[in-house]
Length: 374
Image (cartoon, rainbow, N blue to C red; front, side, top):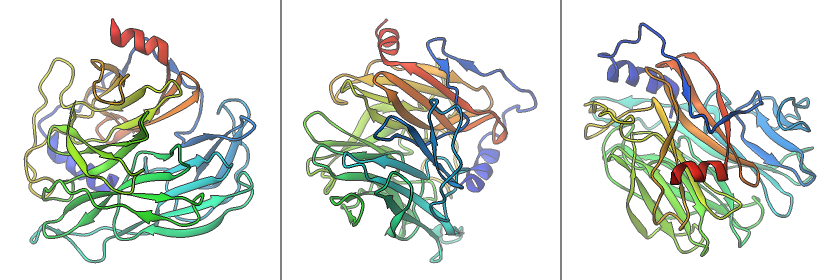
């Protein structure tokens, strides 16, 4: 969510910690450096060329992301500094669809007396598409109004439907709720699902920052950030139109989002911040404007796990990276080639919100699977 708000939050949460010295970043030896200068999002074009989007526009790479072409401008409102605020997909019919939080009219204000969002809060979800491999872009439109924040994935299902999911601020009490948006005509028009409401009260409470993947039977699995010590999950049996099975998952988590990806192999991979650091307990923070109940804001480690049964069970996770006294959070995953998983941390800081240091690695599925099963 918004960096300006989170920065204040972390100053409060970690006031008792010593941030006067730097700590070295640790990366699991099974990972390899990723030689690219951007955090994505990425797609593969029909000819295998890699493509991405940034504030300047649409770019291509013929060397696996090491260098990029001059941009083709798309539109205003895209903000690369805010991770997980825009995603790109290429459909099976070769349509490129970009969904993004439109920062052109961004505004957030919170009434601390009422503990409610003010009426002028605005961060809309927009879409735009290209039918000529990024040469031109058409059908720019708002697909979810009001105030919405970061999201973690844009998928196409076996039916051809394109789906993404978002949180959305609501009132009485002020909190976030979640829905999905979907298109059956290559991003030309969009529909919205029912809302998922887990309750809560605060400008970082409720159901937040969802991620989703299609399962082998065609159902859609959504994992939702909460302040309830774990990710919650929702299942759609209607290709993202309705969410009617909503339960806590077995995945412990801090108040931070995860990224879920279905691999070419059919396995699911998840990267996220667990409730506590490995072998330690992380103190929960009491911040009534943020959350109704005390919550863990642990973001010093990124963990990874794989499910081989559509998310019913997960292998015991391992830590893939540690940044003591800093943070590695808001992950992005991309399968560059079958079994080659790119992992990027949208927020990667050596010291709280200071001294950014990019985090971009790749892990191979079989090596990861062996490590998880050791």
